[in-house]
Image (cartoon, rainbow, N blue to C red; front, side, top):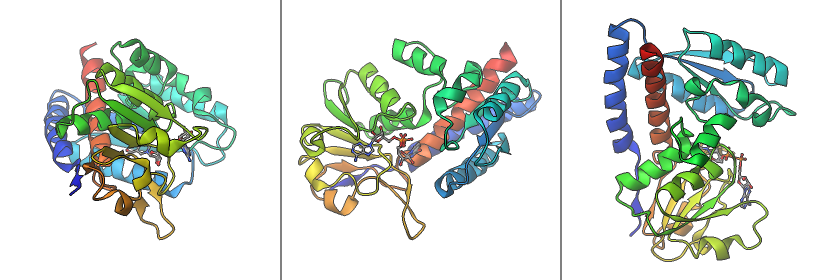
Length: 283
Ligand code: NAD
């Protein structure tokens, strides 16, 4: 039978620690404060923003949502990020994706100060990660590694296939897995024979944003499958990239959507917010 790799227990443990640290910051002056910058009208993004707001509230983290509109320009977004980076009342900044048509993350992310870049999206944060130096790591990638460790799935020496090469999930995840001594293959939309590549791996991470992309024929018997996908199905439900019914029985373990990577990602982001606040208070 396929084991379900829930993220709920791990998220709860992280959150318990974060809540205490947030309370200590509040007791000694001000609550940690996160600014969420949104420039889209995407339903999946709205769902994510709402879950972040609720998580922050539960943990004692103040949260401002700044809606710039789905037609915001590169300049407008950069100006907002620059202003929040300079604002000492703001500890942490998160820029939601998708961005407006014509605006790329690369055009704007360098305007986020590294000390407030809790989702590790700026070129500086990504460079620190690639160099093996300290900085904020993209929370989704970190969540995949933490979820695997929590469920005691060995990474050292094992072959992990990552499906997706974005700067916010696939690429940073590959770096983190390398740091755990895994052998990493990155697959993407131009990979010629995806099932051949992924079925050679011990662990497959699906992070493509395509409903049902990874099926039973993409994995080998006994593989571990991590589903990062957070896609809105036609019926409005949030579903992953893995066709779970075709993988169950063949995979040794599969992370569910929702309830797998998602809650751990949110918990790690909130932990980063508190860390950013602690760093700025002690500076
Ligand atoms: P993205 O669109 O930026 O990147 C998708 C990647 O998948 C690209 O590198 C592309 O080459 C690859 N890809 C697309 N189609 C493919 C195919 N047919 N075969 C192989 N590779 C293919 O997306 P992203 O921002 O990296 O997000 C990926 C998924 O993860 C989305 O579903 C997103 O919603 C989800 N996500 C989840 C969390 C979470 O906390 N659980 C956080 C962030 C993103």
